[in-house]
Every structure is written in C-alpha cells, then in structure tokens.
Length: 123
Image (cartoon, rainbow, N blue to C red; front, side):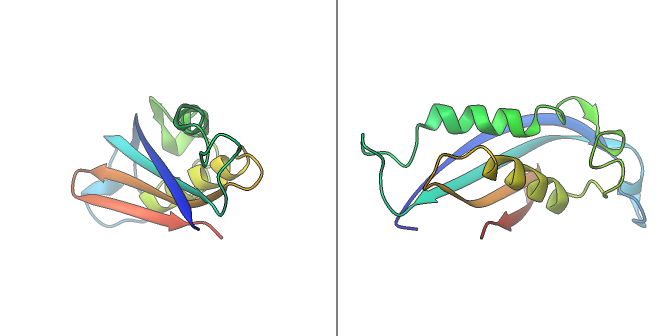
C-alpha cells in the first residue's frame, strides 16, 4: 500500500486458555490494546485514506461484544481458543467488513500486556 493509517483502542476482558499447560489456563483478565492499520493505493477526494474517527468507530464496533466479557463464553470464543492471535484475526475480519471501497485492512495487533502482542496481516 502506498498510504497507511492506524488507530489504537482498548477493551477489558477475561479469558482462560484451553489446553494450555500453565497459569494462563486459569481465569484471568487483561486490558487489551488493539492497533488496526488500514491502507489504500489512492487517497480519497479530500486527501485521506479515510477519517481517523471513522476507523476508531469501526474498531469499537469490532470488539464491542468482547469488552467487559468472559471471552470463553462469548461467540466465537465459546468454541475458538481466546488467544491473542485469534482475537486479532476476529477483529481483522470485523474491520474488513466495514471498510469503504479501496481501503484494505493491513494489520491488527493485540497486546495482552505492555510487552506481549500478536499480529495478524490482511490480504
């Protein structure tokens, strides 16, 4: 992509990793940090990839059902292990469905802590 923009938002949720051998298999919570990067080959008529505030709203919508939830009981994580990687992919797919024509989801990164994150790439 020639142009990229990104936004970050936060949500809080608890999870317990299935089939994990360690303390993270027990119920615990995070203040999840989410970065979404979108791009375009051309700018729109007013010289933007898209409006930052619109992308922030899309991100909020993408994880609205996850915020303040127990992920293991929230679709799709009632069946899919609620790992940072799977959460990133879930949010990426939600973002893709909302983007205007010509704008592509490049990457979503999800941090469980300040030092640990997982990213998934579009396309």
